Length: 304
Image 1 (cartoon, rainbow, N blue to C red):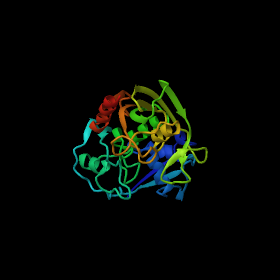
Image 2: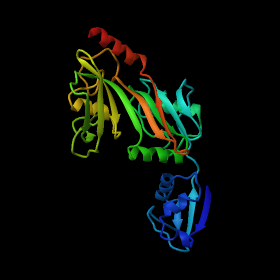
Image 3: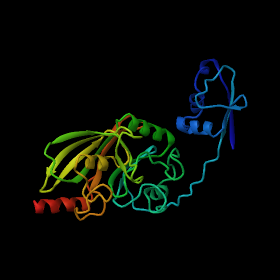
Image 4: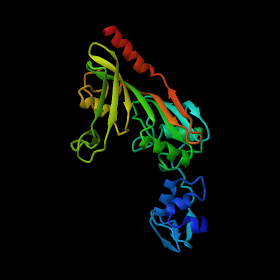
């Protein structure tokens, strides 16, 4: 275990210890340093402190850099649909049916398994089971995801998500014919008390959630919509569209049983845009909907 010692100088006094330590090495993210402090790896004058400790002139700070935790996720060779990759970020088009990261029941065949075989320099902020994962989409949702290859990129991308500056546009096929062309759903989402595996619109233990939608095409009993996420809550589009009476076609959790011939919700994350963590250049990517999705649209066209 590597131990680093530093003494607080005049220009560093009254600064938080996590800020001081993260400035020692540009590869250390603030989040990583805060985790080390929480685990007791950082001490001031021999004593453990909290991450918000304000440094005093002459304080001696020691930090023990723990050995990297070995991932217990097996790398698996996969034919990943990579849209962009450099030293900091990777953009991948996830197919329908693929789980993003390992979880009970899905410890292999996930996107993370494939990413680990593709590259060995993923951010470790989200832990051993979710390296590099900044945000996720559901198993049966296809589309674009941004992946962080180091902790600094991870922090930047997460901050952009928090600041609501990431562009995320989805296409969805929903039950019913929506009469108005545009709409905004501003309704908080939380865990369903009756079914802990589901989310619902509620005021209890909920978080703000905003979805903007535009109707792209109307069919006999269905509509094709584009949804733009302002926030990114679990199952947000699926819950919000059900809330206003237009559940997603094929959705086994939030939709009706009688639906279109598709396994899982008809939802595709087609457009993703963000500011590059290193170059500060805005980048935007677009992936076409998969064949299962376009086949449904062809079917609806014929029925109409």
